[in-house]
Length: 211
Image (tube, rainbow, N blue to C red; front, side, top):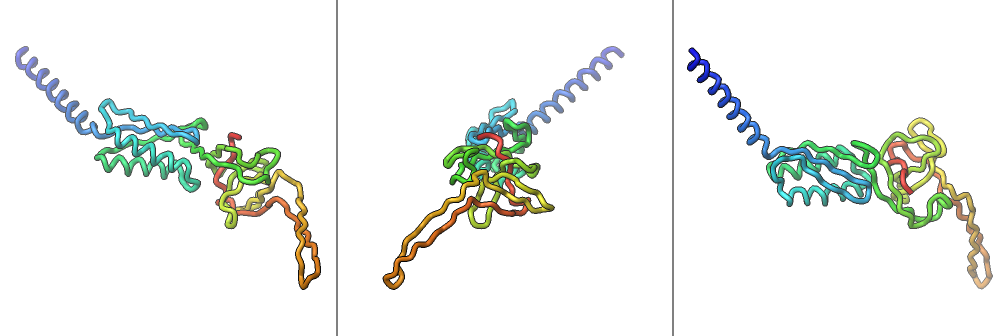
């Protein structure tokens, strides 16, 4: 009786070991991937116990950095891109995106062009934008604009699905140009004011967090 019981225990242990080995082997090509970014740089980390192809990790890093710099990317699109790259190497991955703002919080780098936000922001200044639809009056945001591509402005008003964006620079520039028409001298005065504009809320990419 004791011999029979002992054999049963041994068989159960063997079955458990075989099952564990099968599970480990079946999950050898599965790993967690952490995309960590501060908005200007990206690191890729794997949680696998097994060696992961370095070519896969390098390809992920290049693509993730391009995604971070893309105004139209999102946490979801980055995760999808990492999954698509992994599938090329016969891997399945569970992707996590982290930044200085927390998990699933995606920053984006940008550069200020122009003087419309002086004195808060200077021409050529580097900024970091947190991509979010959660913004309020007084926040500095980056938004799409049909004529100027990307603009950085302060939220002045929110009215339904429209947002009024204002420049911090309130100076009005007056420029005089001289021209001659039929030999007669004419002086033309051109008034330049910093851009203030209404845009749809969906045009706002995110809030400027670092400058």
